[in-house]
Image (cartoon, rainbow, N blue to C red; front, side, top):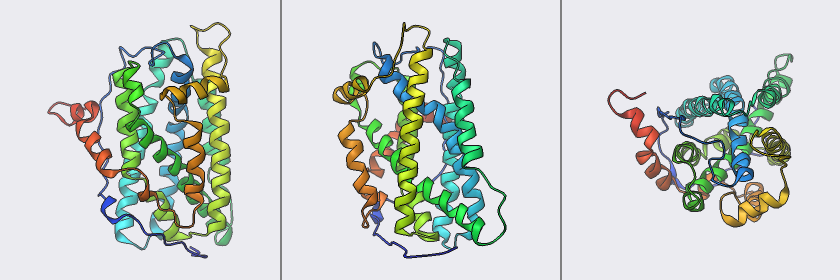
Length: 302
């Protein structure tokens, strides 16, 4: 692999922790369609995660399994293997929400088919000759994952601290799913970036793939929110509106636009390292008390 103009920003050493996949057990029987009471728009904005993450995280795992032979650092290799295990578990946990949505009258299949095409076809393996072209496409995807993981860690840190969701009476099972997942995103937030730096680290590639990842995420997210609002059987003329997103941010049940915009120069800074943002200690503290994780770890659990 090329190592063109590598960036070696300094991580926060105390933030590293060995990674492991945690079993979880969620019971969706009592989760309502609008799990943030009285706020279908914010509910469905977050529900887009259940449409994007299963295919996206399966794609992460697929790409990283191809990359494993090129990793020359043993600790990073162990981190990547732990990352693969956690992402596989995330994909399954969000996939398990979809039958509940369908039972409540909102069939996500038309949209998930489009997301599957995006990750499996557009960003999937290509028939390329061995050598430089094949390595280039692999590195592009490694860099894309690093950029996407910047935003999954951002969202993970946000949901761990989103006390407004509790105050609004959000469904506790859904909150636990989001916070368990978010905590693991914070816990492993440095792995994708460290892998990118280890194998390539080119700043121009980092900027280029950030722009592609950010644009794709914004497009897919607004499209997913629109799909949910338009197909929600309880809404008459449901529409996704920017004003509702901004309102959710002001109320604290969604990230604010300002926080999202501030995350951009963070990632594009030449001194950026993911360990500088978020708290591993906070993440692990939640994982130690997550109802789904503790239920699965108990005798007879999942």
